[in-house]
Structure formats: C-alpha cells, structure tokens
Image (cartoon, rainbow, N blue to C red; front, side, top):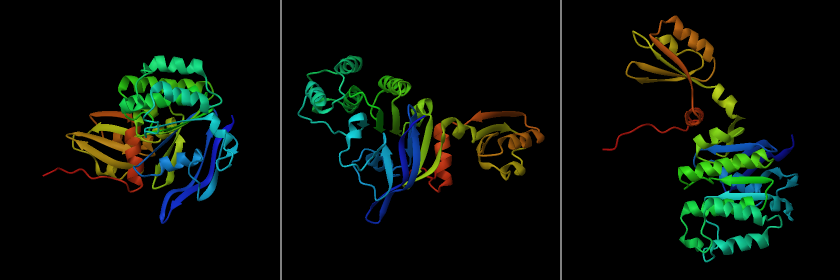
Length: 303
C-alpha cells in the first residue's frame, strides 16, 4: 500500500516556542489517520505544514510524493481541506462560493457538488455571513469533496455540527476512504474518531507521544471492575501494570495498562464477589495517556 503522507523529524518553532517537535509518521493510501491531543499541542500547526501553508523549521514532509515546500505546490490541487475556522468570502452567497470553487479547482466535479448541496440542504441564495457555524462547515465539506481530492485534511471539521449532520459527515469520510482517498483528521471528537479511524497519533506539547492503531490502543489498556467482601487488597493497588484504582462505593475500577491477564488472575485469587473485564473507551484512553505525560486536572468544587 502506498505511503501518501510521510514526515521525517518535522518541527516548527516560533521564537522560543516549539509548536511541533520531531514528528515522524506515515499515512497509507485509503486510510483514516486521526490526530488527537491536548489544547495547544501543535495539531493545527502540523496540518498547516502538510498543506504547505506553514514552512517547517526542521525536518521534511511529503504529500502525494511532493515536498510540501515545493514552490509550485501542484499537489494541493489534489488535497481537500476543511477546518472549523471561517475562511469564506462573507459577502458571497453559497452559489457564489460554489462558482468560485469551480473556477479555482481544476478537478472540480459539478455533478458531485450538486449531490452534496442537495444532501446538506444548503440554500444557494443565502449569503455566507448569514449561515450558522455548522452550515459553513457543511459548505466547506461541499467544496472540499467537489474537487475530487486524493487527500482530505480535516482540522476540527465536525465542530459545531449537530448529531445528525455529524453522523452524515462521518459516513462521507468513511466512503471517501473506501474509494481510496487518504484522510488525516485532527479532532477532539474522540467517540467519532474511535468509530472510523485506522490509526491515531497522540500529540502533547508538540510531540507525538503515542502512535498506534485504534484496536491496539484499546487492547493495551483494560478496566477491571471488581467487588471484594473486605475491600480492595493492597496487592492489587501495587501490582505491575496497574495505572490507578477508582473507587465508587464497594465497586473498584482497576485501570490496567499492561499485564491485564495477570492482574485479572490476581483479582480471582482474592475471591471477588463480582468481577468483569471491560474495554476502555477512547476518551478514557486519551485521559490515561495524557496523565502519564503529566497533563492532568484535579477535581475541585467551586465555593
């Protein structure tokens, strides 16, 4: 399978601030690659470098075989981009924006454009400035998909969408990937990403702290929910692989990063009255990974 996006030691520095540090990754053709991370982790800067909009301070990146700093930038004609930031001409109507896209992008497909406009039910005569944030995001998807992209780069592209439209968008992303389009998407919508991504990179402070498949990531971490007649044995709190223990009444949730089978067997040896092994969801996984990197927020009560 072809490697469509390749970065090697990619970095960006603004003055004394290192926004992106030593990012090396590959994205295969037809895959959906997720980028998640803490606020200010460098996700948008990374995507901006892939688009050739931001010049790297170090390292290199190639998209569709072209260096992102190629001054001709012809690969961009084959890349669709959607962000939650407003970049339309606000004095234009929806129809005007479509006409502008038709004149700008050589690969523009009018038939596909009409299908998307009808599916999203966007009013052609409405000025862009009167559209809601969610409707502007839908218009951005119409434009990005109408140019028949080979790569689709999404930066918080489902932000501001209601649940119905978000599901529609996720289905479109999956359809594009199934047809061979390579998708790179940065998002805080961890539940949506969990459903569709093949691989994911976790960013923190400009670095990739973990890069894995979604299935491997969930398999490496388990939640063991257990009740003991005399409370949780001390041996379980300090067992290898146990990240932490959460207590809710008589129920203990033992979060295990490695050695899950051994920890489960240790639980059985202490005679639990109830025990169940559960997968962690992507949100839990994200919290645990960032907690390991020293990024955590303690619970507090407002006065």
